[in-house]
Image 1 (cartoon, helix red, strand yellow):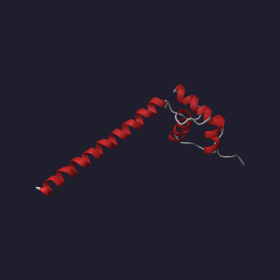
Image 2 (tube, rainbow, N blue to C red):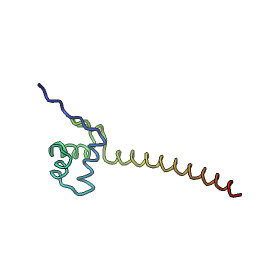
Image 3 (cartoon, one colour):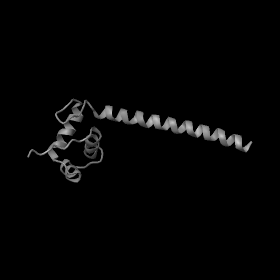
Image 4 (cartoon, rainbow, N blue to C red):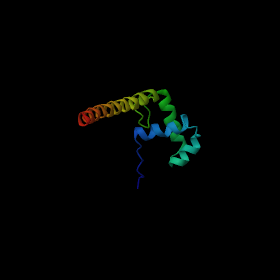
Length: 97
């Protein structure tokens, strides 16, 4: 019987690489903690740094593009929170007058 390959999401791959690039883990240490092969983690890191599509399925997701996507999502959330606070402030201003 053929063993099924595990598929990892783009987000998982990026977060795994961040362990190495941003948090200072060694490839072997991060791979062991995540339960993945260290060669695979090293390949994900190279592919993200090069910004190209690789055999592992990193779809042109450079580190900068991933960060931009994350920041846009956070910006949208913060704008929504600001609007909610504006409405709440207006509501409570009416209540106290």
